[in-house]
Image (cartoon, rainbow, N blue to C red; front, side, top):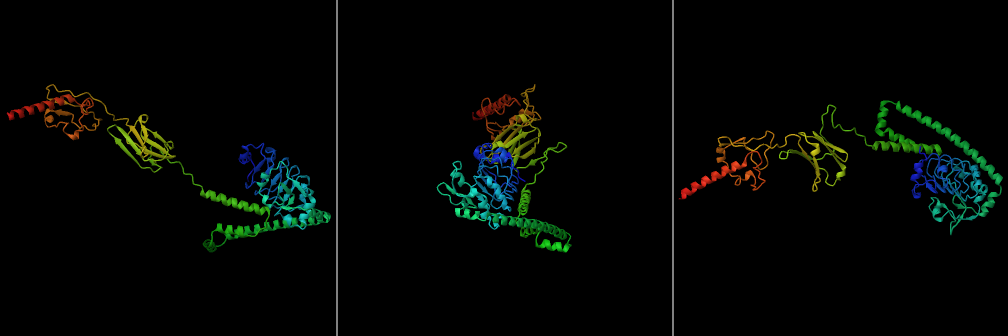
Length: 489
């Protein structure tokens, strides 16, 4: 059941800047509303009210709308015309396709002296003999031709849904009409002749309709009980019969076919039952389309063990940069994805990256320093690069190598945790003069890296004394040069 709430009216009052106290027109059609309420207290200045195609069974809570000019209640479940005496300025009332069977209830509209248009098409009372004459004679305000009120603009009348059924509108003049047909003077004179006899016949037809309606309700209740009994007998049938039924059609299809193909009278109850059936079917369909909520993925077990998770299913590579003593993570993030959709969390033993709400978590091979880590985004590939320096194993400087007392050996100490610098060959912890005799000049050997003159020399790293090695090379070159000169001489 849908209720008329303040939020619903405000959403329908966008043309009035969502203000409801000064609202003059509101449309609440096709909202499955089953009761009129709160409108007369919240919208006192209302002039046009659309409530068609709902499930309203009774006209109520509109008597305080003194400025109301047009009320549309078509396609509802209204049985009686009532509670409209307080709408002093009511000019148009639309009750198309309802269930008004008491034609005598039209007399309650006598006090609405400004009423000029009335629509009762599709109601049971329109089938009564002398229906039109009775309404014309009962409501004298529907006579003649009247000038449009200056408060009712021509554009507003053109926006009404039943304007296409109105006749006699030309140059701002509008005939007073019943069911879209103008009422002529001759028709008024004929209706007033024999009014008492006409009222008697109308009352007789009303009584017949009410008795028939009560009888139909009893028969409908009996049919429902029989249908329930048949359904129970089907449930208790033998297995062979059930197999035959399942082979032909499912129970759901059978029930759907029975519901729509079983004849029933057109009553407010049947219309409400059809609405409930469609609503239940729609809810079942929406429930079937809803995605099941997945339980949150476990990232860390109860015993504190971190798990590897790749929910976004991204390619990645994890490399250890021994030269800089760091770990590099290359995560192949989507190239055109905005960086604000990513969140990086580096911990000493693992790294977690959130990509559009999906978690990527990876355990690191060694402890890192989270506060010194750097996250960068590649401008060409869009990949996410994480540089995480190790917490242990960083390069430690040592003192330069000193010559031995006899001057024949050079001692070089290497730290156990130290890695060789790129471009520098790994040397043993002890270098002798004999080994230097067979060594090559690093300027002539490409595998030792590019020779650099000046301050930044890769050989002068503090691991051993480069000056003494250089002097040994020079003395060796000077000796070989003297031997060449003696041979030429």
